[in-house]
Image 1 (cartoon, each protein chain N blue to C red):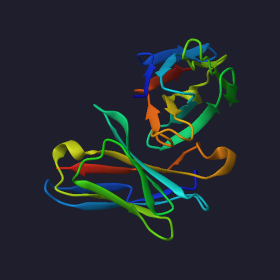
Image 2: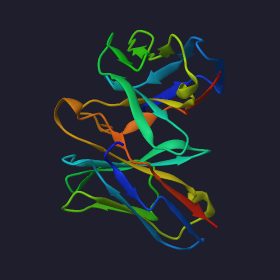
Image 3: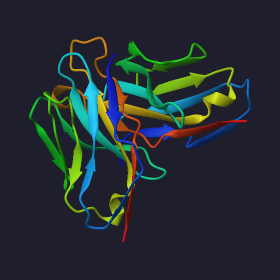
Length: 116
Length: 114
């Protein structure tokens, strides 16, 4: 079945540091890939997505590139802020036609804490 | 604000009881998904409804059931509750067209079983 593996957390950084959160996946076919963010006490918000190989998703300074050859979708940000402190989830969704179509398969989440 | 609403926000109940969680999708979205978030299992897909019909089931216990009504809101029913059912329950909705696979999450219902 489909699975997503994220780097172990938590991650603690100083403001303006560079962020990388690794994500690799296992899936049949050509899934869509997502990063979601969860702030304390809130639901998940879609941060960015990519639907095919070599696509780059970007939003709010975050970006991730769909790498089919390495089955990866690593999240990066050049300069983090205190307000970026949250839990980040990598996820995949099988595209139309598969039996797993629609549902999201999540990684275990990575807690990011940014200090001033 | 995602446009997805869930009620109640918090629910505290006892083992053996039955509860109903409610979800209203974004206006126009036909798909509703339910997920369970717990410390030991992470985020797990439970069930997917599309325009009133069940489309897919995930790791949903037989004690749990769901339905989607003609007005597209959905309810998740949890019965014979156990301590291990304590978790955050999220619903999400998605539309059609190019954004069919983007899911928008509600704020969740935190269930505590004592």
